[in-house]
Amino acid sequence: MLKCKEVVQRADALIDGTPLSFGERLALRTHLMICRHCRRYVRQLDALTEHLRQQTPVAPLDDGEVDAILARLPPPPS
Amino acid sequence: MSESQLETPDFVERLRDGDRAAFALLVKHYHPRLLGTARRLLQPADAEEAVQESWIAAHGALARFEGRSTVLTWLTRIVINQARMQLRRQGREIQFDPTEDTGDALAHRFRGDGHWQTPPLTWTLHGPDALLTRDELKHCMEKHIDAMPDNQRLVLELRDIQGLDFGAICNILDISPSNVRVLLHRARTRLFQLVDHFQETGEC
Image (cartoon, rainbow over all chains, first blue to last red; front, side, top):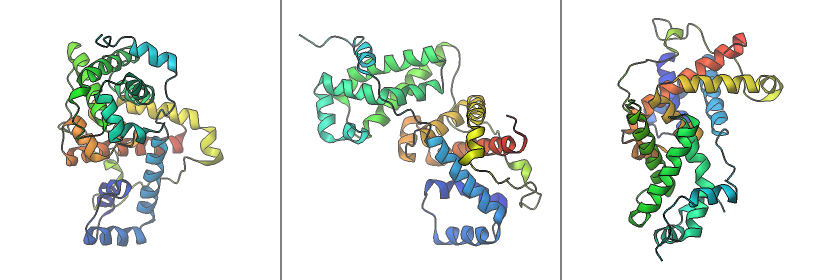
């Protein structure tokens, strides 16, 4: 039987979709079935990583900003 | 133009052939992400400079890009190397292996038998309550991410904020998957502990 501390160690694998052996998966599932604290931990860790993912800057640069960067590149060979 | 279109063999071929319009598209779409990465290691002005230098370096090296990783992975690696060079000039060296043992931020919350002593509180990051404290929590998270060791902060940025896969992160940082996982676990438990504390006390 896994201890809660071990479930917390392994929760990252669940979040990341890391392949687990049948035995590891079964041990986690059994523990999570009976332990609401660990269920809460996994659920909230998942929400937290999802929240972080939404912080990624997605807006592309505008053309003026792109031009400013390109202006510092060496000129194309003539 | 989506990011996946910047990674097709045809597009990469245009880049290698020195197509300036293709390079401009790369800058337009990837610059903000690369700047986000550089800012995890450098002050804002230095980060801008590091990414600008990276574009110059990448432009010069594109003809030799072999396509063994994605263009984004290759560029991120260049940016991090530029950032490390800047840091070295300031007398700072980043150790990417998780050598220093800062431990697990949740360790004190377990009993001696390995079960919860202080279990997590129930909280959510969505909904009306979360909206009311959203800015404070965001500020608080940023403060804690800034305070992490460089290696944890960078792995958190690449994996959980940028969404890169483990293979790409290992390639970028030259460390093993198990070391990436250790660093990521430490970074995540720190943030989990912070959110739990914030939800309980309303304080950062």
